[in-house]
Image (cartoon, rainbow, N blue to C red):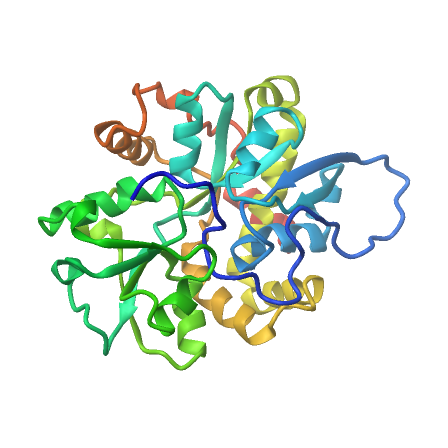
Amino acid sequence: MGKRSARIRRTKKPEGTVPRGRQYSGRKAAPTPVELQIVTLALEWFLNPDHLPIVVAKEWGFFREEGLDLSILVPTVPEESLHLVAHGKADFGIGEQTNLIKARDQKQPLVSIGPLLAHTVVCLMYLKDGPIKRLENLRHRRVGWPGLAIDLPILGTMLKAAALTHDDILPVDVGFALTDALLTGKADAVFGAFVNYEQVEAELKGASVEFVSPTQYGVPDLYQLVVFTSDLMAKQSPRIVRGFSRALARGLALTHEQPEEALRLYQKANAMADPDLSARTFKATLPYFPKDLRQEPARWKQVRDWLHSRGVIKQKMPLDKLFTTRFVSKPYAIRHKLL
């Protein structure tokens, strides 16, 4: 499985979502006499329930209360958010923890300010009535994947646990269509699926699927998605970063405390998206949203060290170069503002 050009991680984009390369501006807010600072956030994929707390914070006006006018940019490929923030073309970004560590190893000045999905959701998925029952069954079987190089060390670690290597499987680059590849028989299993999305999508299409988490086979538990900014932004504009973090933390708090209202706000803002898929995906995603933006040094160390052991990064950079907790708000202050 050699390196391929970057592809979108998941299946084809649902109809009605914001097109990649476009901006989502949210509902039109009431005029305000306060001049707002425009800030941009680059997503890693099209707008979907993974980003629901951000949309909630925007729709509820939490960013505006911090003096910020948030513009959401939908890139064309997942890694583009890293490039945009590193080169000052976006203020904040969403990306995978593994990609951020790899980018930092390549001298890109990026730092995580908090998790968005706090645990691993990427998985291996296969049909319950198919030929795969356990990892060992992957030998000489077709494994669909989205062509992302960052997936290789994760899949490789899982294969090693089953006494297999990449040479023992038949990789099939299925691009966007992971679920379709599995259901139409193009692949016997797919890797790179998100358990909170592709599994839901497959079940909505009538399929019965099993999923295997990498954490069961030696891959450390990931902060699957993190929110990051540039070193320059954190140093020169701490007020903006702190305000952004505070608004996002309030969005997370509201999502946990009032999930029905949070989903209503998201569906109102993204009215053309499939409401059933959005609702079911949100239900599956809710347990993965963190309660606040705190990050654990031990978890960052585990992922950094694992990537180094797999040869993905060349050096074990200091943890304070990868993430910061200086912009984390106190949870009680967030809850008070929601009352």
